[in-house]
Length: 393
Ligand SMILES: Cc1cc2nc3c(=O)[nH]c(=O)nc-3n(C[C@H](O)[C@H](O)[C@H](O)COP(=O)(O)OP(=O)(O)OC[C@H]3O[C@@H](n4cnc5c(N)ncnc54)[C@H](O)[C@@H]3O)c2cc1C
Image 1 (cartoon, rainbow, N blue to C red):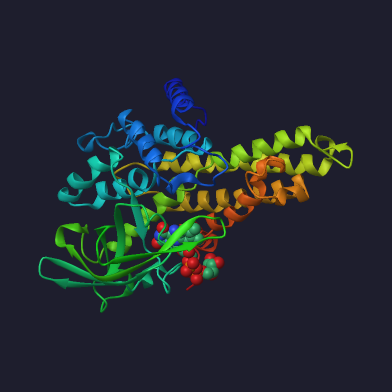
Image 2 (cartoon, rainbow, N blue to C red; image 1 turned 45 degrees about the horizontal axis):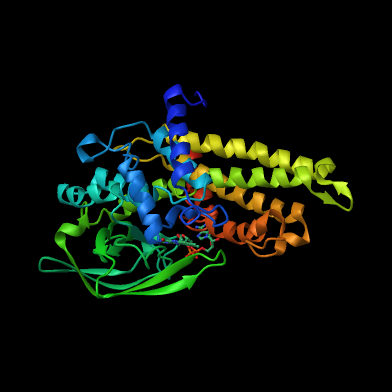
Protein backbone atom coordinates (compact mmCIF):
# COMPACT_ATOMS: atom_id res chain seq x y z
CA UNK A 1 0.00 0.00 0.00
CA UNK A 2 1.31 3.42 -0.97
CA UNK A 3 0.75 5.94 1.83
CA UNK A 4 1.82 8.98 -0.18
CA UNK A 5 -0.71 11.09 -2.09
CA UNK A 6 -0.51 11.09 -5.87
CA UNK A 7 0.21 14.36 -7.73
CA UNK A 8 -3.51 14.93 -8.52
CA UNK A 9 -4.47 14.32 -4.90
CA UNK A 10 -1.80 16.74 -3.69
CA UNK A 11 -3.11 19.34 -6.15
CA UNK A 12 -6.62 18.85 -4.75
CA UNK A 13 -5.30 19.21 -1.18
CA UNK A 14 -3.66 22.50 -2.16
CA UNK A 15 -6.86 23.72 -3.77
CA UNK A 16 -8.75 22.93 -0.56
CA UNK A 17 -6.16 24.83 1.51
CA UNK A 18 -6.53 27.88 -0.75
CA UNK A 19 -10.31 27.68 -0.39
CA UNK A 20 -9.96 27.48 3.39
CA UNK A 21 -7.53 30.41 3.51
CA UNK A 22 -10.29 32.47 1.93
CA UNK A 23 -13.46 31.07 3.51
CA UNK A 24 -12.57 29.48 6.87
CA UNK A 25 -13.18 32.72 8.76
CA UNK A 26 -13.32 32.77 12.60
CA UNK A 27 -17.14 32.72 12.61
CA UNK A 28 -17.16 29.30 10.94
CA UNK A 29 -13.80 27.78 11.87
CA UNK A 30 -12.29 27.58 15.35
CA UNK A 31 -9.83 24.90 16.45
CA UNK A 32 -10.57 25.68 20.09
CA UNK A 33 -14.03 24.18 19.64
CA UNK A 34 -13.73 20.44 19.75
CA UNK A 35 -14.88 18.00 17.07
CA UNK A 36 -16.84 20.21 14.75
CA UNK A 37 -18.17 17.32 12.69
CA UNK A 38 -21.75 17.67 13.77
CA UNK A 39 -21.96 21.41 14.04
CA UNK A 40 -23.63 23.22 11.18
CA UNK A 41 -25.79 25.06 13.64
CA UNK A 42 -25.56 28.70 12.56
CA UNK A 43 -26.52 30.55 9.34
CA UNK A 44 -22.80 31.29 8.79
CA UNK A 45 -21.87 27.62 8.98
CA UNK A 46 -24.72 26.70 6.66
CA UNK A 47 -23.48 29.32 4.19
CA UNK A 48 -19.99 27.85 4.44
CA UNK A 49 -21.32 24.37 3.62
CA UNK A 50 -23.13 25.82 0.61
CA UNK A 51 -19.81 27.15 -0.67
CA UNK A 52 -18.37 23.63 -0.41
CA UNK A 53 -21.41 22.36 -2.28
CA UNK A 54 -20.97 24.99 -5.00
CA UNK A 55 -17.41 23.71 -5.51
CA UNK A 56 -18.84 20.23 -6.10
CA UNK A 57 -17.00 18.93 -3.03
CA UNK A 58 -19.95 17.30 -1.27
CA UNK A 59 -20.71 13.75 -2.39
CA UNK A 60 -17.59 13.54 -4.60
CA UNK A 61 -17.52 9.76 -4.21
CA UNK A 62 -21.21 9.23 -5.02
CA UNK A 63 -22.49 7.78 -8.32
CA UNK A 64 -22.88 10.30 -11.12
CA UNK A 65 -26.60 9.53 -11.45
CA UNK A 66 -27.11 11.02 -7.98
CA UNK A 67 -25.00 14.11 -8.57
CA UNK A 68 -21.66 12.64 -7.50
CA UNK A 69 -18.38 12.37 -9.39
CA UNK A 70 -17.43 8.76 -8.57
CA UNK A 71 -14.05 9.95 -7.25
CA UNK A 72 -11.95 7.68 -5.03
CA UNK A 73 -12.61 8.06 -1.31
CA UNK A 74 -9.21 9.63 -0.77
CA UNK A 75 -10.56 12.95 -2.12
CA UNK A 76 -13.32 13.05 0.45
CA UNK A 77 -10.76 12.10 3.10
CA UNK A 78 -8.42 14.92 2.08
CA UNK A 79 -11.30 17.41 2.18
CA UNK A 80 -12.74 16.25 5.50
CA UNK A 81 -9.40 16.15 7.28
CA UNK A 82 -8.50 19.62 5.96
CA UNK A 83 -11.81 20.99 7.25
CA UNK A 84 -11.31 19.35 10.64
CA UNK A 85 -7.72 20.63 10.92
CA UNK A 86 -9.09 24.19 10.72
CA UNK A 87 -11.99 23.51 13.10
CA UNK A 88 -14.48 24.07 10.26
CA UNK A 89 -17.73 22.15 9.74
CA UNK A 90 -17.15 18.83 8.01
CA UNK A 91 -18.99 16.65 5.49
CA UNK A 92 -20.99 15.29 8.42
CA UNK A 93 -23.88 12.91 8.66
CA UNK A 94 -25.62 13.80 5.40
CA UNK A 95 -22.76 13.19 2.97
CA UNK A 96 -20.72 10.79 5.06
CA UNK A 97 -23.36 8.49 6.53
CA UNK A 98 -26.98 8.91 5.49
CA UNK A 99 -26.46 9.67 1.79
CA UNK A 100 -24.19 6.64 1.40
CA UNK A 101 -26.61 4.37 3.23
CA UNK A 102 -29.53 5.65 1.13
CA UNK A 103 -27.53 4.97 -2.04
CA UNK A 104 -27.23 1.33 -0.95
CA UNK A 105 -30.65 0.74 0.58
CA UNK A 106 -33.05 3.63 -0.04
CA UNK A 107 -35.97 3.51 -2.48
CA UNK A 108 -35.71 5.52 -5.68
CA UNK A 109 -38.21 7.94 -4.11
CA UNK A 110 -35.96 8.58 -1.09
CA UNK A 111 -32.85 8.90 -3.23
CA UNK A 112 -34.50 11.50 -5.48
CA UNK A 113 -35.92 13.34 -2.47
CA UNK A 114 -32.80 13.46 -0.27
CA UNK A 115 -29.58 13.01 -2.24
CA UNK A 116 -29.76 16.32 -4.19
CA UNK A 117 -30.55 18.20 -0.97
CA UNK A 118 -27.62 16.55 0.82
CA UNK A 119 -25.03 17.42 -1.81
CA UNK A 120 -26.55 20.89 -2.10
CA UNK A 121 -25.99 21.40 1.68
CA UNK A 122 -29.68 22.20 2.04
CA UNK A 123 -30.44 19.86 4.94
CA UNK A 124 -28.89 18.71 8.20
CA UNK A 125 -29.64 15.42 9.94
CA UNK A 126 -29.92 14.04 13.45
CA UNK A 127 -29.42 10.34 14.10
CA UNK A 128 -31.67 8.49 16.57
CA UNK A 129 -30.62 5.04 17.70
CA UNK A 130 -29.94 5.34 21.46
CA UNK A 131 -32.66 5.01 24.09
CA UNK A 132 -32.56 4.77 27.90
CA UNK A 133 -32.32 0.94 27.71
CA UNK A 134 -30.58 0.76 24.34
CA UNK A 135 -27.11 2.29 24.15
CA UNK A 136 -24.39 -0.27 23.52
CA UNK A 137 -27.19 -2.76 23.00
CA UNK A 138 -28.83 -0.70 20.24
CA UNK A 139 -30.83 -3.72 19.04
CA UNK A 140 -32.86 -3.37 22.22
CA UNK A 141 -34.51 -0.13 21.03
CA UNK A 142 -38.18 0.12 21.98
CA UNK A 143 -39.45 3.24 20.23
CA UNK A 144 -42.67 1.78 18.80
CA UNK A 145 -43.76 2.15 15.16
CA UNK A 146 -47.34 0.95 14.67
CA UNK A 147 -48.70 0.28 11.17
CA UNK A 148 -51.68 2.46 10.22
CA UNK A 149 -53.27 3.29 6.87
CA UNK A 150 -50.71 4.96 4.59
CA UNK A 151 -47.85 4.87 7.06
CA UNK A 152 -46.69 4.45 10.65
CA UNK A 153 -47.28 6.05 14.03
CA UNK A 154 -44.19 6.45 16.22
CA UNK A 155 -44.36 6.69 20.02
CA UNK A 156 -41.63 6.56 22.64
CA UNK A 157 -38.29 8.15 23.46
CA UNK A 158 -34.73 8.58 22.20
CA UNK A 159 -31.76 9.93 24.15
CA UNK A 160 -28.38 11.40 23.12
CA UNK A 161 -29.71 12.67 19.78
CA UNK A 162 -26.98 15.16 18.87
CA UNK A 163 -28.03 17.93 16.43
CA UNK A 164 -31.79 17.41 17.03
CA UNK A 165 -32.13 21.08 18.03
CA UNK A 166 -31.04 22.39 14.62
CA UNK A 167 -31.38 19.47 12.18
CA UNK A 168 -34.05 19.30 9.50
CA UNK A 169 -34.50 15.53 9.31
CA UNK A 170 -34.35 12.67 11.79
CA UNK A 171 -32.83 9.31 10.74
CA UNK A 172 -34.45 7.15 13.34
CA UNK A 173 -34.73 3.46 14.23
CA UNK A 174 -38.01 2.09 15.63
CA UNK A 175 -39.51 -1.28 16.54
CA UNK A 176 -42.04 -2.29 13.90
CA UNK A 177 -42.24 -6.01 14.74
CA UNK A 178 -42.00 -6.64 18.50
CA UNK A 179 -42.86 -10.34 18.15
CA UNK A 180 -39.75 -11.01 16.07
CA UNK A 181 -36.18 -11.56 17.46
CA UNK A 182 -34.85 -8.17 18.56
CA UNK A 183 -32.48 -7.61 15.60
CA UNK A 184 -35.21 -8.43 13.06
CA UNK A 185 -37.94 -6.23 14.49
CA UNK A 186 -36.35 -2.85 13.79
CA UNK A 187 -37.01 -0.53 10.82
CA UNK A 188 -35.44 2.76 9.86
CA UNK A 189 -37.41 5.95 9.08
CA UNK A 190 -36.84 9.54 7.97
CA UNK A 191 -38.94 12.06 9.90
CA UNK A 192 -38.99 15.86 9.56
CA UNK A 193 -37.49 17.28 12.73
CA UNK A 194 -40.19 19.98 12.93
CA UNK A 195 -42.98 17.38 13.25
CA UNK A 196 -45.45 18.62 15.85
CA UNK A 197 -45.39 15.28 17.70
CA UNK A 198 -41.66 15.62 18.52
CA UNK A 199 -40.44 17.25 21.72
CA UNK A 200 -36.73 18.02 22.07
CA UNK A 201 -35.01 18.58 25.42
CA UNK A 202 -31.37 19.57 25.85
CA UNK A 203 -28.75 17.41 27.56
CA UNK A 204 -25.37 19.09 28.14
CA UNK A 205 -22.31 16.86 28.10
CA UNK A 206 -19.04 17.10 30.04
CA UNK A 207 -17.49 18.37 26.79
CA UNK A 208 -19.89 21.36 26.56
CA UNK A 209 -21.55 19.73 23.57
CA UNK A 210 -25.30 19.79 23.47
CA UNK A 211 -27.10 16.57 22.78
CA UNK A 212 -30.83 15.88 23.28
CA UNK A 213 -33.64 13.72 24.49
CA UNK A 214 -36.42 13.40 21.90
CA UNK A 215 -39.96 12.37 22.78
CA UNK A 216 -42.36 11.00 20.15
CA UNK A 217 -46.08 11.44 20.63
CA UNK A 218 -48.16 9.94 17.80
CA UNK A 219 -45.70 10.95 15.08
CA UNK A 220 -47.15 9.95 11.69
CA UNK A 221 -44.61 8.86 9.04
CA UNK A 222 -45.87 8.07 5.50
CA UNK A 223 -44.90 4.66 4.03
CA UNK A 224 -42.52 6.27 1.52
CA UNK A 225 -40.29 7.44 4.37
CA UNK A 226 -39.48 3.92 5.55
CA UNK A 227 -35.84 3.31 4.55
CA UNK A 228 -35.37 0.05 2.63
CA UNK A 229 -37.26 -2.99 3.86
CA UNK A 230 -39.34 -3.33 6.99
CA UNK A 231 -37.38 -5.31 9.60
CA UNK A 232 -33.98 -4.69 8.01
CA UNK A 233 -33.32 -1.48 9.97
CA UNK A 234 -30.71 -2.94 12.29
CA UNK A 235 -28.54 -4.07 9.36
CA UNK A 236 -28.74 -0.57 7.84
CA UNK A 237 -27.96 1.04 11.20
CA UNK A 238 -24.90 -1.21 11.61
CA UNK A 239 -23.60 -0.07 8.22
CA UNK A 240 -24.32 3.57 9.06
CA UNK A 241 -22.40 3.15 12.33
CA UNK A 242 -19.36 1.80 10.47
CA UNK A 243 -19.39 4.96 8.36
CA UNK A 244 -19.93 7.16 11.43
CA UNK A 245 -16.98 5.61 13.30
CA UNK A 246 -14.68 6.85 10.60
CA UNK A 247 -16.32 10.02 9.25
CA UNK A 248 -17.22 11.71 12.53
CA UNK A 249 -13.95 11.10 14.39
CA UNK A 250 -11.43 12.91 12.24
CA UNK A 251 -7.72 12.46 12.81
CA UNK A 252 -6.30 15.88 11.95
CA UNK A 253 -7.48 17.71 15.13
CA UNK A 254 -5.47 15.20 17.18
CA UNK A 255 -2.36 15.83 15.11
CA UNK A 256 -3.00 19.56 15.18
CA UNK A 257 -3.23 19.59 18.99
CA UNK A 258 -0.07 17.52 19.35
CA UNK A 259 1.67 19.99 17.03
CA UNK A 260 0.60 22.84 19.28
CA UNK A 261 1.87 20.97 22.34
CA UNK A 262 5.25 20.35 20.68
CA UNK A 263 5.52 24.07 19.89
CA UNK A 264 4.69 24.86 23.51
CA UNK A 265 7.36 22.42 24.76
CA UNK A 266 9.88 23.96 22.37
CA UNK A 267 9.50 27.41 23.97
CA UNK A 268 8.29 26.97 27.57
CA UNK A 269 10.30 26.40 30.73
CA UNK A 270 9.60 24.67 34.04
CA UNK A 271 11.54 25.51 37.22
CA UNK A 272 13.92 27.53 35.07
CA UNK A 273 14.72 24.59 32.78
CA UNK A 274 13.54 24.42 29.15
CA UNK A 275 10.81 21.80 28.67
CA UNK A 276 12.41 20.71 25.44
CA UNK A 277 15.36 19.37 27.42
CA UNK A 278 13.22 17.33 29.84
CA UNK A 279 13.71 13.66 28.87
CA UNK A 280 10.26 12.62 30.11
CA UNK A 281 8.55 15.34 28.06
CA UNK A 282 10.56 14.45 24.97
CA UNK A 283 9.78 10.74 25.33
CA UNK A 284 6.09 11.38 25.81
CA UNK A 285 5.87 13.64 22.76
CA UNK A 286 7.84 11.19 20.64
CA UNK A 287 5.55 8.35 21.67
CA UNK A 288 2.44 10.35 20.84
CA UNK A 289 3.90 11.38 17.47
CA UNK A 290 4.47 7.70 16.69
CA UNK A 291 0.92 6.84 17.70
CA UNK A 292 -0.33 9.64 15.45
CA UNK A 293 1.26 7.84 12.51
CA UNK A 294 -0.58 4.66 13.51
CA UNK A 295 -3.92 6.52 13.69
CA UNK A 296 -3.29 8.15 10.32
CA UNK A 297 -2.57 4.82 8.68
CA UNK A 298 -5.59 3.15 10.30
CA UNK A 299 -7.71 5.93 8.77
CA UNK A 300 -6.15 5.39 5.37
CA UNK A 301 -6.83 1.67 5.68
CA UNK A 302 -10.52 2.46 6.14
CA UNK A 303 -10.47 4.75 3.09
CA UNK A 304 -8.74 2.06 1.08
CA UNK A 305 -11.27 -0.60 2.09
CA UNK A 306 -14.42 1.53 1.73
CA UNK A 307 -16.30 1.92 -1.54
CA UNK A 308 -19.60 3.72 -2.03
CA UNK A 309 -22.21 1.14 -3.03
CA UNK A 310 -20.37 -1.63 -1.14
CA UNK A 311 -20.81 -2.59 2.52
CA UNK A 312 -18.53 -0.36 4.65
CA UNK A 313 -15.57 -2.15 6.29
CA UNK A 314 -16.60 -2.95 9.87
CA UNK A 315 -13.33 -4.05 11.47
CA UNK A 316 -11.34 -1.18 9.93
CA UNK A 317 -13.93 1.30 11.25
CA UNK A 318 -13.75 -0.11 14.78
CA UNK A 319 -9.95 -0.33 14.82
CA UNK A 320 -9.69 3.29 13.65
CA UNK A 321 -12.25 4.64 16.11
CA UNK A 322 -10.85 2.70 19.06
CA UNK A 323 -7.29 3.84 18.44
CA UNK A 324 -7.94 7.42 17.32
CA UNK A 325 -10.29 8.33 20.17
CA UNK A 326 -7.96 6.69 22.70
CA UNK A 327 -5.05 8.66 21.25
CA UNK A 328 -7.10 11.83 21.48
CA UNK A 329 -7.43 11.19 25.22
CA UNK A 330 -3.72 10.47 25.56
CA UNK A 331 -2.87 13.75 23.81
CA UNK A 332 -5.32 15.58 26.11
CA UNK A 333 -3.68 14.01 29.18
CA UNK A 334 -0.24 15.05 27.92
CA UNK A 335 -1.44 18.61 27.32
CA UNK A 336 -2.53 18.85 30.97
CA UNK A 337 0.60 17.20 32.35
CA UNK A 338 3.16 19.04 30.23
CA UNK A 339 1.57 22.48 30.54
CA UNK A 340 1.27 22.21 34.34
CA UNK A 341 -1.31 23.77 36.70
CA UNK A 342 -2.12 26.67 34.31
CA UNK A 343 -3.48 24.09 31.87
CA UNK A 344 -6.55 23.82 34.06
CA UNK A 345 -7.64 27.34 33.13
CA UNK A 346 -10.66 27.50 30.85
CA UNK A 347 -10.42 27.47 27.09
CA UNK A 348 -9.90 30.94 25.53
CA UNK A 349 -8.20 32.22 28.71
CA UNK A 350 -5.53 34.47 27.28
CA UNK A 351 -2.95 33.82 29.98
CA UNK A 352 -3.41 30.04 29.93
CA UNK A 353 -0.84 27.84 28.23
CA UNK A 354 -2.06 26.49 24.88
CA UNK A 355 -4.95 29.01 24.91
CA UNK A 356 -6.68 26.94 27.58
CA UNK A 357 -7.26 24.13 25.11
CA UNK A 358 -5.93 21.49 27.52
CA UNK A 359 -8.86 21.53 29.92
CA UNK A 360 -11.41 21.64 27.10
CA UNK A 361 -9.90 18.77 25.17
CA UNK A 362 -9.44 16.80 28.40
CA UNK A 363 -13.19 17.01 29.03
CA UNK A 364 -14.25 16.57 25.43
CA UNK A 365 -12.04 13.64 24.48
CA UNK A 366 -13.95 11.48 26.98
CA UNK A 367 -17.17 11.70 25.01
CA UNK A 368 -15.57 10.73 21.71
CA UNK A 369 -14.75 7.37 23.29
CA UNK A 370 -18.49 6.85 23.90
CA UNK A 371 -20.48 8.45 21.05
CA UNK A 372 -20.82 6.26 17.95
CA UNK A 373 -20.31 3.17 20.14
CA UNK A 374 -18.11 2.95 23.24
CA UNK A 375 -14.52 1.69 23.09
CA UNK A 376 -15.48 -1.61 24.74
CA UNK A 377 -17.97 -2.22 21.93
CA UNK A 378 -15.29 -1.55 19.31
CA UNK A 379 -13.07 -4.09 21.11
CA UNK A 380 -15.91 -6.63 21.10
CA UNK A 381 -16.39 -6.12 17.35
CA UNK A 382 -12.66 -6.59 16.67
CA UNK A 383 -12.55 -9.67 18.94
CA UNK A 384 -15.47 -11.29 17.13
CA UNK A 385 -15.09 -10.14 13.53
CA UNK A 386 -11.31 -10.10 13.22
CA UNK A 387 -10.14 -12.64 15.79
CA UNK A 388 -13.11 -15.01 15.53
CA UNK A 389 -13.64 -15.08 19.31
CA UNK A 390 -17.13 -15.91 20.63
CA UNK A 391 -19.81 -13.29 21.33
CA UNK A 392 -19.56 -12.08 24.94
CA UNK A 393 -23.26 -11.37 25.59
C1 LIG B 1 -21.71 13.20 23.16
C2 LIG B 1 -22.53 12.04 22.72
C3 LIG B 1 -23.27 12.15 21.56
C4 LIG B 1 -24.07 11.10 21.14
N1 LIG B 1 -24.84 11.25 20.01
C5 LIG B 1 -25.71 10.28 19.66
C6 LIG B 1 -26.59 10.46 18.56
O1 LIG B 1 -26.56 11.48 17.87
N2 LIG B 1 -27.47 9.48 18.29
C7 LIG B 1 -27.55 8.32 19.01
O2 LIG B 1 -28.37 7.48 18.70
N3 LIG B 1 -26.73 8.12 20.07
C8 LIG B 1 -25.81 9.07 20.40
N4 LIG B 1 -24.97 8.87 21.50
C9 LIG B 1 -25.15 7.69 22.32
C10 LIG B 1 -24.02 6.69 22.25
O3 LIG B 1 -24.08 5.95 21.06
C11 LIG B 1 -24.15 5.81 23.50
O4 LIG B 1 -23.90 6.64 24.62
C12 LIG B 1 -23.18 4.67 23.49
O5 LIG B 1 -23.53 3.75 22.50
C13 LIG B 1 -23.11 3.96 24.86
O6 LIG B 1 -24.39 3.65 25.30
P1 LIG B 1 -24.86 4.03 26.80
O7 LIG B 1 -24.56 5.48 27.01
O8 LIG B 1 -26.27 3.58 26.97
O9 LIG B 1 -23.92 3.22 27.75
P2 LIG B 1 -24.06 1.69 28.13
O10 LIG B 1 -24.41 0.89 26.92
O11 LIG B 1 -24.97 1.57 29.31
O12 LIG B 1 -22.59 1.33 28.54
C14 LIG B 1 -22.03 1.66 29.82
C15 LIG B 1 -20.62 1.10 29.90
O13 LIG B 1 -20.66 -0.32 29.79
C16 LIG B 1 -19.85 -0.77 28.70
N5 LIG B 1 -20.49 -1.90 28.04
C17 LIG B 1 -21.77 -1.97 27.61
N6 LIG B 1 -22.00 -3.15 27.01
C18 LIG B 1 -20.83 -3.84 27.05
C19 LIG B 1 -20.41 -5.12 26.59
N7 LIG B 1 -21.25 -5.92 25.97
N8 LIG B 1 -19.12 -5.49 26.80
C20 LIG B 1 -18.25 -4.67 27.44
N9 LIG B 1 -18.59 -3.45 27.91
C21 LIG B 1 -19.85 -3.04 27.72
C22 LIG B 1 -19.75 0.42 27.77
O14 LIG B 1 -18.62 0.37 26.96
C23 LIG B 1 -19.73 1.58 28.74
O15 LIG B 1 -18.42 1.79 29.22
C24 LIG B 1 -24.13 9.91 21.90
C25 LIG B 1 -23.36 9.80 23.08
C26 LIG B 1 -22.57 10.83 23.47
C27 LIG B 1 -21.78 10.69 24.74
